[in-house]
Length: 341
Image (cartoon, rainbow, N blue to C red):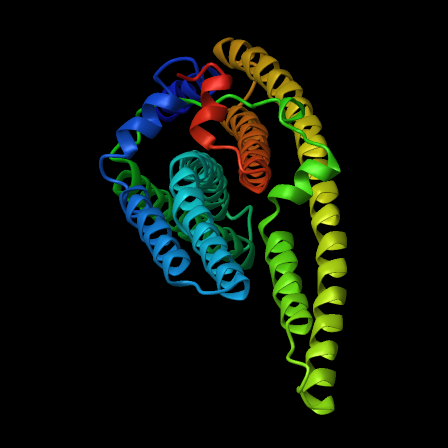
């Protein structure tokens, strides 16, 4: 019964994310130790300084455009490799840790069920009711179940270590992570294109190629003029492809968010059903109407339902981060609008 109580305690924590700290507080605490957050400021400052220097030293429009390309690449690196990583380590890292915790709990219960079966078959073997090959099979199954549990437990501990390293938070701290309504932040196709960094890069590359053609000296050879013109046409095609790709990315990201939101809602309903079934079987177990294996099996079912919910929430947040970064909204401001600060 000790295992049952431990599992129930864990389920109660996962079932009530309001207990603990807010996502805003978790992010604030993580800023103290998170290397990506600490490096992000330097990366942004370096990009701005290099851009200012390039603009001061530029002597024509082409050099100014090249400086803008470098600034854009620097900003992309800042957002994707530092800012995005910081939020991922705090938010997605929390989900990963909880999912690994559930997997370890479920693997432990599966091991206990396999152990009960092994002990039952050992007793049957001793009574000459079961053949030795059948007993050997149960012994192998027990070893497999133990290996699976130990592996899941190690994976959970590794996730805890990584999460603590990136956030400074204890694994027992429950973080209240809401599911934001992405529709509050959707933008028009025109607005999306204006902030889409790959498209802006393609636009600048086209402008640079056009400037190179427009400013060719009259004495330029036919060969060089043809090369420059072909390069401009290539950049024009690349620009049109980037336009299509940007809008396709918008569509796919919004579709992902739409369906993930529905999957979260369905997963929440399945968790509620599994919790009701768990309560029912717990009552019947107290009356001696069900076996320990049956209650373990129902606990595994509830854990799996919660694992599915957390997985969908994690994937939703990942797509949400991509969308917010793509439309150039500061994630801190987004959190404020969610009532997180």
